[in-house]
Amino acid sequence: MGVKLVNITKVFPDPHHPGKEVVAVHNVSIDVKEGEFVTFLGPSGCGKTTTLRIISGFEYPTEGEVWISGKLVNNDPPNKRDTSMVFQSYAIFPHLSVSQNIGFGLELKGLPKETIRTETERIMVVMNLTNLANRRPDQLSGGQQQRVALARAIINKPSVLLFDEPLSNLDAKLREQMRLEIRRIQKTFGITSIYVTHDQGEAMTVSDRIVVMNEGNIMQIGTPFEIYSRPANRFVADFIGRVNFFEGTVTQVREQGISVRFTHGVEREVASCAQTVRSGDQVLVVVRPESLKLFLKGPAPMGTGSNSRGVSERILQRVPVQSNASSGQPFLEGRIDKVVYLGSVCEYEIDTGGEKPVLAVTHNPIEEGFFQPGDLVGIDFASLSAHALPQGN
Ligand SMILES: Nc1ncnc2c1ncn2[C@@H]1O[C@H](COP(=O)(O)OP(=O)(O)O)[C@@H](O)[C@H]1O
Ligand SMILES: [Mg+2]
Image 1 (tube, protein in one colour):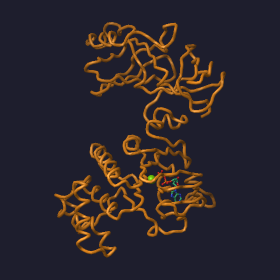
Image 2: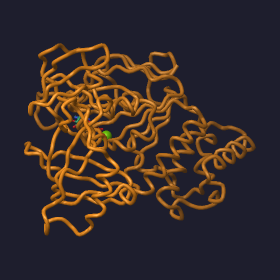
Image 3: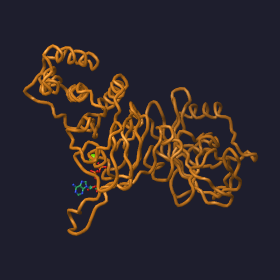
Image 4: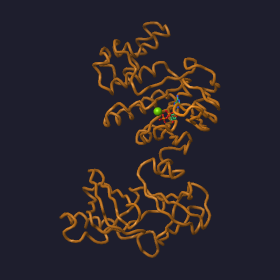
């Protein structure tokens, strides 16, 4: 049955300007299916926490309806709603052991000691906490404390788990580990989950669907794949990952995709479009850095590049000079301006004479080789990886 929000709006009195109001959440609707993991993603202040607090009952909506498991809960206080919240601060009791912390909720319910023991043990096994059962919180790492907090939320078997930026206190490596852990545990128990984060990598990892928010409004709802590869508008394209925008005019609309003449005169096919367009419409075409294909047109002039010229030559061999235009002319040409070598990938800023540098990424530099600053490159893309946004979007 999941969670359903219908036209939720939340207006607060503005604390800084008496008499004025802040619209924290505006007309938000979503149907979260039972067992689904949905993440609200957006910049700080966009209304994520307010939305979550409205679901949990810590805040009441100004307008709209909240449904949990098929029941309208607008007027129910938090303890009458079948939800459990996992916070950023772990909120576990310092004077209780791990197993006591986890079993605490069941003790409050007055369940028999034996039931509490078996339930606690079962959950500690799933969460890899068994050998920490007798430790106290101050003897645990941040990640372990977060696992205890999660176990404590899950043991009550809520219909809905709510997470508000639960990993922000952890260091980067642990965060990555924990988000996989959260996903695994959510799948194991099949609990409907609503998660809030401003971290797009986190959202991509844990979610079945992502709700991208900005200034209280939903910008797009979609799977991680849809949000990343087929963004609904400029905000989503820009907020999720890195992106190149190329301006152009639609010259042809076919059943599958469109043709676009770009401002520098070159024409290309673009596989998808956020909305219906017509010939003559202005569009902004989105191409991700890793979807750009680079090929060497001319090495850096002597003395400007590095001495590993052989590496560039190998790229020249592996990526044949080709483009999807009949003229054989590349989409763009430019000089490699900046190279950031990250081990698994290489990132480039390419000066093509435009306002902003073009961003490109190549993979597996150890085998594929990589370019040097000053190299002259051709740049192109496959129509499949290009996505058009009607202008003004
Ligand atoms: N109790 C409140 N009173 C006034 N304004 C609030 C209150 N709570 C949140 N806001 C405002 O509502 C907007 C959304 O806040 P919030 O939901 O906390 O955003 P997020 O969690 O996405 O960072 C912000 O502009 C915030 O300042
Ligand atoms: Mg918040």
